[in-house]
Every structure is written in C-alpha cells, then in structure tokens.
Amino acid sequence: LVFVLGCCWLVFAITRISWLNTLLTNENRGIGLGIFSALISLGVASGPIIVKLTGSQNYLSFVVSAILVLLASQSLYSIKNLAPNSINSDRISLINFYKKNPNSFFSRFFLDFTTYIIITLAVVFGTSIGFSNENSGLFITAYMASGFFDIVVGHLLNKTSAKKLINIGYLGCLYCFLLISLYQKSFGFLIFLFFIYGLFIACIYVSVFKMINEDYPADQLVSANSTFQFIGTLGSISGTLIGGVMIDIFGSQGFPITICFGCLFYLTFLVIYEKNKK
Image 1 (tube, rainbow, N blue to C red):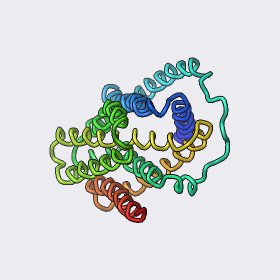
Image 2: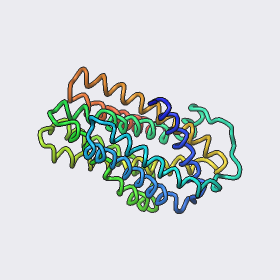
Image 3: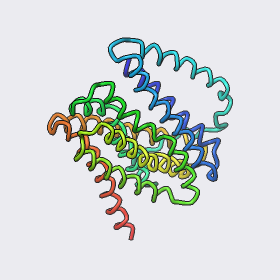
Image 4: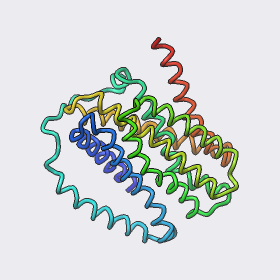
C-alpha cells in the first residue's frame, strides 16, 4: 500500500509542477510557485492536527484522509484541458541535468534530504526526548505552518536572485538545528525553532523550483521535472536512511546532527563550486 501511494504521489508531483510552470511566465513564476507551495504546506500542516484530534491508535485518521482525497480529486476535472500542447519526451539524464545547473542539482538533493528527515523522523526525535507521539507530530505542523512565507519568497524573487535566497536558506537552516541540538527541554522553544526552520526552507524550495523551471523550455518541463523529482527522491531516501542510522548511534542528537550535515555539505559544495568558476 505504501509503495502504491508513493508511485501515485510521484506521478502527481511531476505532472502538477510541469503543468503549473507551463501556465506561468518568468514574471509571475516566483509568486505563482509561492502560492502553490504555501497551499501544499497548509495541507501537510493539517495532517498532524487531524491525527491529534482523531488519535493515532485507530483508523479514523485514515478515513478522514480518504474522504479529503476523494473531494480533492474532483478539482482535476476542471483543469484536464490545461496540459501543454506539445511535450518533448526525451529523457534528461542526471549527468546532463547536473552539467546544466549544478546548484539546482545539489539544492534539490539536500532540500529533500533535510525535509524528509523532518517528516519521517520528527516524531521519533520528539518521543526520544520525552514528548508524546501526538505532541511530537506538532513539530511537523510547526515546520509546515510557515508555508505562508512561500508567498513572501515569491515576491522576493522579483528583486533578489534565486541563488542568493537558496544560500540564505541553507545558512538559516544550519543555525536553527545547531540551536535544536543544544536546547531540547522546552517544547515551546522547539516548536518556535521548527517554525523558523520552515521559513528558511521556503527560501530554498520556491527559489530552486523557479531556477529549474526557467532553465528549460515549456516542451521539456515534464522531462526536466521528472529528473528533478528523481534527484529529490534520492535525497529523501538518503536523508531518512542516514537520519535513522544516526539516531540509532547518537540517540536524539542524531536528528539535528544529520540535518546540520546536509546543510554543511551543500554549503561546502557552494564554496568549492564558486571557487572553481573563478
């Protein structure tokens, strides 16, 4: 069941972003992606709240989720004729994608590397430091509740380069999780740090999607976003596996250590890449 859900999610994720960027122009791409990702964040933030209200020891949360999926599917009928007229089906390899824009390659990899550690291991982290499953799930809600800032980033992209916002995002994420590694006693303070972390992730998420979708023409967006999604999948798998191992070895500290590692690796790549360009 989980495997089937994953397949359906990837098909949907690749298609939605390709269609969206076909409809957007370079002038409104930033704000359009910001609104789009803010809505996703709102939905993900609602998940732990549903579990909090329905409980995690029964099937009621699954029933609520199924009903929401059925209701959401009805909206697809109104956009079925908005697909791009022509699609270039030629596959874009990982190597060619990297050569075209190494920055977007590593930005996406470590974006999903860190994001999926939060989504899959935040509850494990919370329970390991003494909080309940339901309260630990609110760390994810706090992280995703910052989704409104995606719209702000969309506006900022009209005045600031995507690359600069990505760099600011990774520096901010590193700082947040250095604090989380030091202060784990106060639930309220942790909620606040997860929220601030989400603000910096917004800088990365919206910026890197804008960057990649301006690198390719409309007829190549499906192929480009397929490869882009695959890069993110590699990052998410790597993040959850490494994060799990680090928690086994270092206990609760393995959680912030792994995310700090991901941020540091990207920033190290950035320094080396910029140095080699000169």
